[in-house]
Image 1 (cartoon, rainbow, N blue to C red):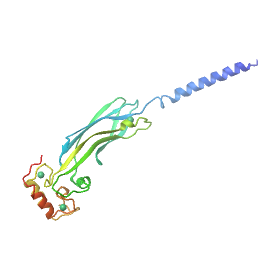
Image 2 (cartoon, rainbow, N blue to C red):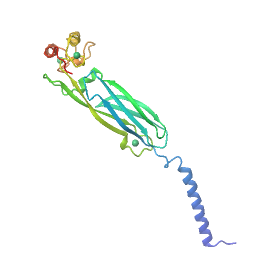
Image 3 (cartoon, rainbow, N blue to C red):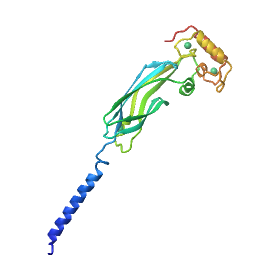
Image 4 (tube, rainbow, N blue to C red):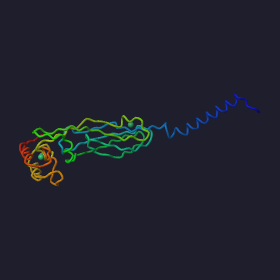
Length: 217
Ligand SMILES: [Ca+2]
Ligand SMILES: [Ca+2]
Ligand SMILES: [Ca+2]
């Protein structure tokens, strides 16, 4: 029996339809139907003002807004300083808050307080608090992977070598102990180099002596 052209065409169409349905079912579950989207939904930090030796607290809340298990790197920053880099694993829909406490290492301050000032005013630097989630495979919405909170204002008072907000005998002990040192020396203490000239010398002592007994905070 010879098939008519019409019959052949309808059979071809049927085969094509079945093939496309089969392909669709095979591709869709592992591919386009599953979304990948991690997000930072909140960053909270305190206090608003800190001394260089103060503790800064940062809470970061992340969410898996996609339909797959995800592993990504969460990075938390204070200005250009990396506070923490950590791996985070979230199942679909999971929300997790990471609580961090951070004390900026003294050695960082020579980098943060630039250009150096040399007068009797405190050195002030606003550090932006922000976090970033690395982009996961297949992720389209990357706009919510970075979250910028406000900032922490760090104040470094002249004469406050230990960053506790006052200039007293404890600071003088630190200054005396690092007198004559330079960066690289074990005694060199960056928070004593008040004029940031790379040496703990008579100028730093004179500067600190002018504030002896002062409670800044
Ligand atoms: Ca995202
Ligand atoms: Ca002090
Ligand atoms: Ca100095």
